[in-house]
Image 1 (cartoon, rainbow, N blue to C red):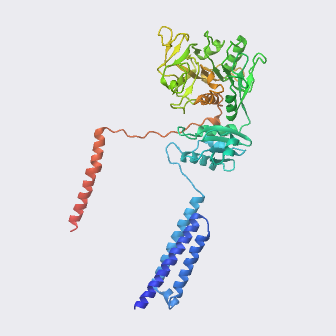
Image 2: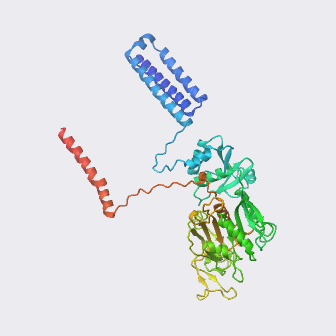
Image 3: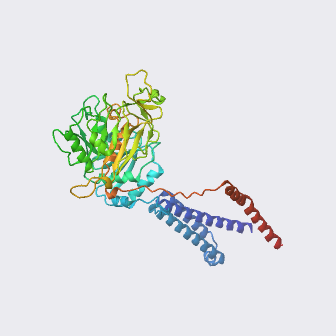
Length: 525
């Protein structure tokens, strides 16, 4: 009896072991998708154990005809079928993933404009991220782009420490730099950092649309009136011009005395720190360019005798006027970094795309003047740069020590920069289309912050580059992507309502449950 029992136990163990090995082998092969040594070994071992178990039977035919054997075989077949189905489902899910966006505002679905841009990419475009890790949200966004057109869109994460040569080839100077590459052209898209919000669908789609276009944005810098030189001299802005190239813009000098017209390919005309007034004819050309929807950047330094570089008629149409007095910053922030009082430190920014991601970041403006804004019909003005409460506009720099005098100085906060946009309804009629046009203007009461040596300080370069990017933004329908935001579904409760809900959840409902269970138990006795 004991011998028979031991043989029976041995056979059951062999059957059970074969079932476990075969199931493990099938699962490993289907789930991983690789029928390597381990799945093959498990299947072979399971088959060998099953064969041994069958051969140890005294009468295999009799065994197969038994009711218990048939039931066991059916159970094994059913188990193997279920495991095979589960393995197949996991294998297909791993290879061919599908996601469904069930949010009300389709927060995880790319906009129709984005889908059109990505699907119509004719030339391969690649996104390079020079960072040690990529956030889950950024990776998910890039995966959604790649799923639309995997042949034309791709991305790669590169550790700039391990791949220093490649980072230098791209010119990646900061950790988190994101470049867009099309052919031999590489353009800096953005820089991810601890305070950055991550990749934006709006910016990424615009960059893809611009990369797929052969059109080059040209920024013309007015020369001939003591403006800052583009390169090669003291106080030049060579660093800023090089950074523009990384953003897909081309900077060129412009002399209106040599060529009395604004070039047709001008995306932006920049007037950076003129020291002498412009000629009336030049101002007329610039005003006509602005009225036709042209975009202007005007950076004006304060003068010993307050002047507006002859730009008064142009600035008046936009409702802005340079104050002429020098902004003084008496806060301790500038002193901590060794700056003089005539170099205001800005940490307050307006609600505008140019400065949207700056938060409490720092930017410097050596010897700056405030900008006065007057409301104009059809023009939207947004203050960009604001000094602190401990600042004022000083009218007499020869006085010592410098102190605020209410009868002639202007108390802060002061507006050092403003962005203006003319709505179509407020534009001047275009002679060719007989339709109103729009234009943009950025005015800042300082030009030193873009000069070599200052451009790389804190957020100075970002102010300039973001302003150029906003001014050069094309209004193509393919670029009119707007980020989706979740709708606020929060329920506001009073203290009484909150306490009532807590009482119901912690006391009333549990007591009702226990009471019902007690009644049922008592009646079943």
